[in-house]
Length: 308
Image 1 (cartoon, rainbow, N blue to C red):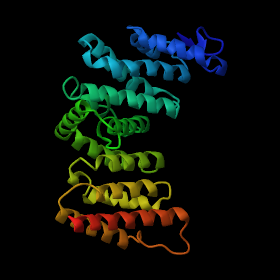
Image 2 (image 1 turned 90 degrees about the vertical axis):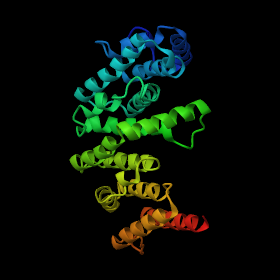
Image 3 (image 1 turned 180 degrees about the vertical axis):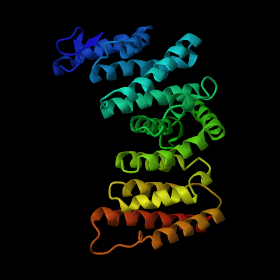
Image 4 (image 1 turned 180 degrees about the horizontal axis):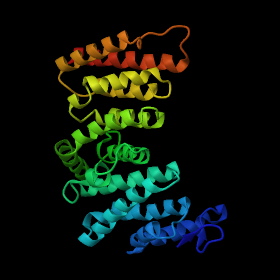
């Protein structure tokens, strides 16, 4: 298949072999069994290096995008076992894999989720994450990445969708509200409390809240526990930007005018009492930008309500 310098196949790390790699990749995508070969190579006893894994995932991604929706039960089982195998082996690996590979795999998970949930795999999150130790750092990191990838695949309004995709996404969100969104919201605080000193994880949690708050039940975020958590993250320069995004996402959430005014005034009071809406000569540029973003969002929200 592919290979690294000194290995059989095409040396994927050789910059002079890019055209050859592209041809081999396209050939594998067109091969009806190419995706199965890629899965077998990915999970085989001789794990390929990250660069080759990335190419194999591109083949699997192509299959998921083009042919997976009409797959038979055997092929569905192969993909499901592939995901289960990945979650099992990645958490026990002594080394963290490259971010580019984690992001690609999270995208693969999101494609399977969008295709299978809820009809073919209603227990997706239970089987892959909730039945395990969700507060383990490696599991939590990938889980939060998958949630963000699901948001891009299913929810993100900045991406143009076909009517078929939009209808599918509405059904998925409705099913998530019924089946798993409460558990997902609870998991954010569980992970936050267990990995409180990990700024990367904390930022991912805040990014999740900012992404999901637009369509989940307001009470899952606008409560004492979550708001206290978000406000506390303004005190850390590493997490303050993500905390700002979470608050702005909450303020921009669609809701009746009366409810939005009450929420905006409550958040404004909390921010003011915490000293998060004032600046002075000692504040750096990032701090001024953060305060400006909060004040701007609060103002726009109140103006929007007034104009309705």
